[in-house]
Length: 343
Ligand code: FNR
Image (cartoon, rainbow, N blue to C red; front, side, top):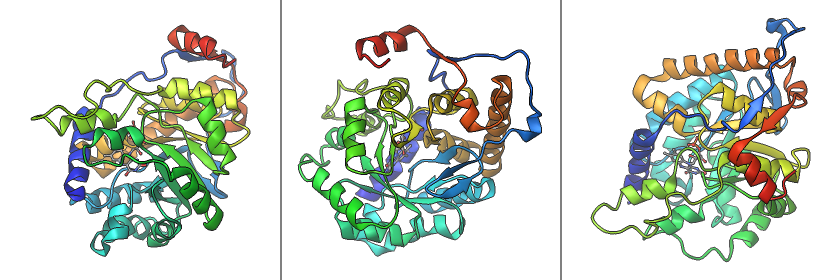
């Protein structure tokens, strides 16, 4: 049952993927007199004490479905070649049934020294979280917060009472960094504040704009009305969530930006606001599935080239300098920031 659902999600996410201009209300400013050598532009950064070559990562996608082994093997190989982090999909299925562990273990096998991130939900006990980390010798653990997705599934969880207590215990007992992660419905400042107070090491705001789990779940119930039929536009967009994070303060905790990223310009905008790293799920899955591993690698190398160009064209040699370059917020996003007092 869970295995089939995971297969449905993969196919539906691929079919629904679209390229977009996600952060069109955010603008970067051109500098007409560059002063650097392009070849000296440095995109490397440190995440959880490991140096990574680019501030981008593969976000949690899969494990446990019949397609997972091949997908995870290929994603892991690309992550290894490019030295970028990779997270696996929810490991609940393999924690409960050992026969699924190989679909996750393959990520560590094909990326032996890179930054690999385990994934469980906030339902998890300390033992489950430890098992997930051990399964792939993970460097960090994502705890996903996916209440809208659960409510969209007739068989999904309805009781979220224990979540905060579970999270506190996991953070207390685990000896790897723990990341709080949305799955595409975004976060507001007050939630980011609350998560930071729980002592998370990083927060992935994963906003509205890309993969939409209410829509994906709704598509699985074509014969009867799905539970969240009218809620396909629910949530806080990625741009809005980034402004919320910015108001909280990017220096207070590492913020990972995700939700709908596929272009270097959007990635650059999130980084210029102060995000530590940009995570992508739908885009790499779509490219890998339709065009293969080499094309995924080529696309990411193209993103690297364009990010370096953007840094040069804003007068920045490295990411720390880029964060200081001016950013304009306009249109609906400006209106949102005004109403939310996010200045
Ligand atoms: C996901 N995502 C996800 N997240 C998570 O924490 N655990 C999981 O098991 C999954 N599973 C999953 C399956 C598929 C097929 C996709 C496309 C995505 C959510 C993902 O990590 C990310 O937060 C959202 O997809 C938003 O990012 P994109 O896809 O718009 O880049």
